[in-house]
Image (cartoon, rainbow, N blue to C red; front, side):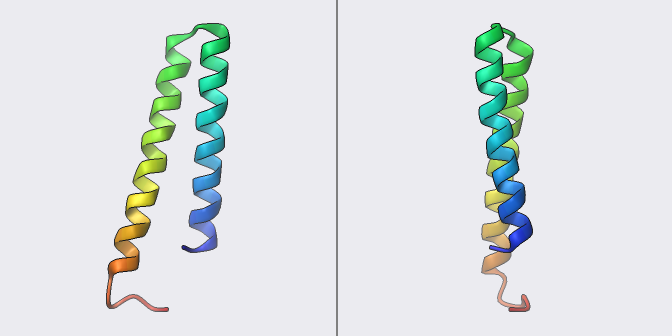
Length: 60
């Protein structure tokens, strides 16, 4: 996993946790939706990285 993927993954995880806490504290459904979107983005980053690692023609 490259450094840029690790930084992006960490930022999405922090944003997800932040918006979940903020959404539950203020009882705002829109903030919880934003947290869910960040969680989906985290999942997509993980899946994209797995696909890139399986490529036999990638440069090491």
